Length: 176
Ligand SMILES: [Zn+2]
Ligand SMILES: [Zn+2]
Image (cartoon, rainbow, N blue to C red):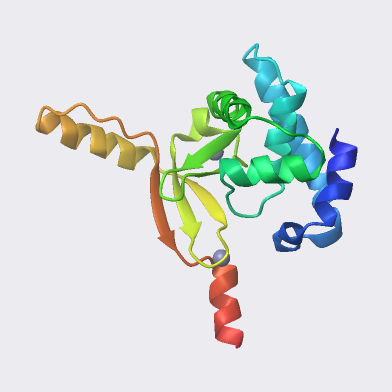
């Protein structure tokens, strides 16, 4: 479970991108527990495979693609068919604990867990480090819906993305 995750994840290069260094293991356990609660609240099963897939996504600083998840799990001894990973990903999206970054066809863990109250978020995705920030922006989605109505169009948009540079990468570039 989460215990083995922290150990294996530390040995990976990706973990160096997670802020907080030594605390990242504890943070991951926390995020996994919140995901478990989200599943329980929706009467969905947080199976072992879903937990494994979620842990890989949550321990990534930016976003991660399905095949990278598959590779990482197989390095840890869990060999899976791509379809199994995709099914887990679908369940995780449905439970709202991960989101899909359309532009990169990759996934990242939701860190807000309050979309219901604050409205749908816009994803601000950093082109340098891959980090994603979620910003509640319900009014923008309302505006899109209104514009669509005005031209009698049925919109399908669920999330919006803005790419750019995060504060950390900007400051790093300044320091050089
Ligand atoms: Zn979210
Ligand atoms: Zn960045």
